Image (cartoon, rainbow, N blue to C red):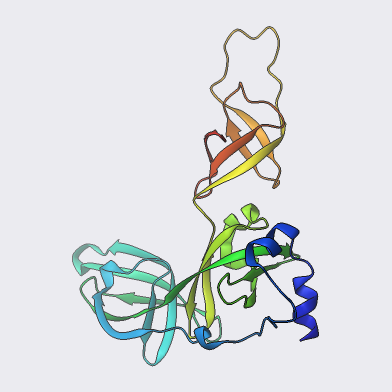
Length: 229
């Protein structure tokens, strides 16, 4: 219990207002009824429809798909080369399926959380309805982990209470920390220039933007979408 209260002290004042948190009435347990995610087994899909992030059951093991590639073998016909991660032990395996081969897919629960803060290689999240806290590796967010900040809404995929993947909003607001100054005497104005954001990422922005401006970035490909209102 002491550890849970220590974590709550890191919550910003604005978050405390949002959640109306009272440490004396909410103990932030590490487990709760919702933590048993509901799965639906027995749904067969053809292997050609498997996508990264899907969860399947094969030979009594449950795997998450990391990569799926359709390959042509000439006269031998087509096949699906699938890279999988064992949900229980994290080991990766590679399997081949026929495009029309039935595979048992397991559906996982998606749940919304709010980011409290990040520290080292861990993100500290809170479930806004139950106040349950969760610590997840930043690796679950992939390259999008750089966009995490306090009060950001994120989504997790859960299987049997275990986070499999995590994602940030597709559009986020960032501040330009540093950008290139237009070169004097150059007649042709480039379409884009490099800009260093407040999260440490470097992106391409229009040449008329300056340091300190807030812009909207697409987190899927780090592309500039426009000025923030």
